[in-house]
Image 1 (cartoon, helix red, strand yellow):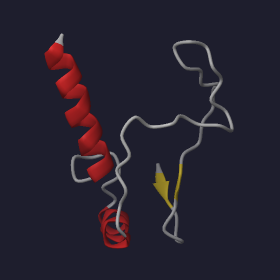
Image 2 (image 1 turned 90 degrees about the vertical axis):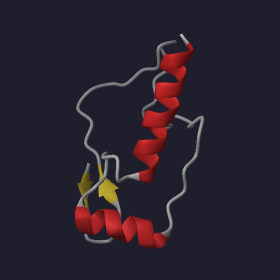
Image 3 (image 1 turned 30 degrees about the horizontal axis):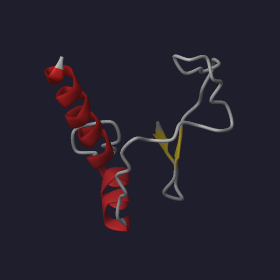
Image 4 (image 1 turned 180 degrees about the vertical axis):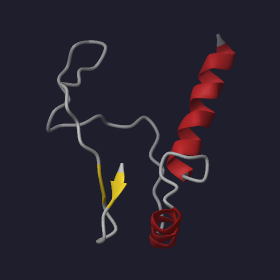
Length: 74
């Protein structure tokens, strides 16, 4: 991920991505199981600190928490 000046971010993909069931996610994406919305203040703080994909990123930390819960159930 690369933050852009307008507050958005860019991810460049160089391969085809398919789900485990073989569905191509190009142009459609993946519908998340859990949605974590960020406030404008959170987005600005993450841009300034470049903290996307770290435990300071609320979306990332929620994903880690949910995956940890799934692993512990097994």
